[in-house]
Length: 168
Image (cartoon, rainbow, N blue to C red; front, side, top):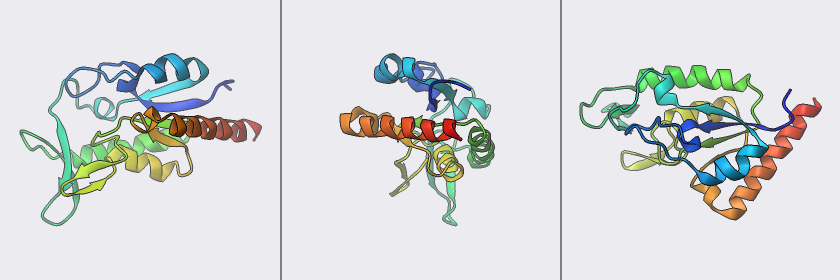
């Protein structure tokens, strides 16, 4: 058992070049400040689901029946089933991985906690599966963690979760 909290994280935030454009979104605070104090569990839903890098950008929307869909922006490939099945399965694996928190990529149609879904707002497919299966797990995105008060609260909740988990 680790002596540090285990935190799932969108791999691009740690500097992995897994974004749709082949780049990363390295977050210096996560890597340099929090990183030495935790054990990271990096995940990139799109790459792990087999979509590769680089890849066409994707958008969440609604089909004519009102069903949530994930489609590529240019070709309009419907990736809903691929990402939904992957997300549900991976979230189940992560539920068994003894995580103490999770940091998601803001604005992502898979990882975002607050993303456009047509004319409304919603959650990305992976974020939805994760928060449903790991109810009560401290979750934030890097945009929220830019706020010092929110960041402090998140870290406190992660360490409280870690203490409860390791006492059991």
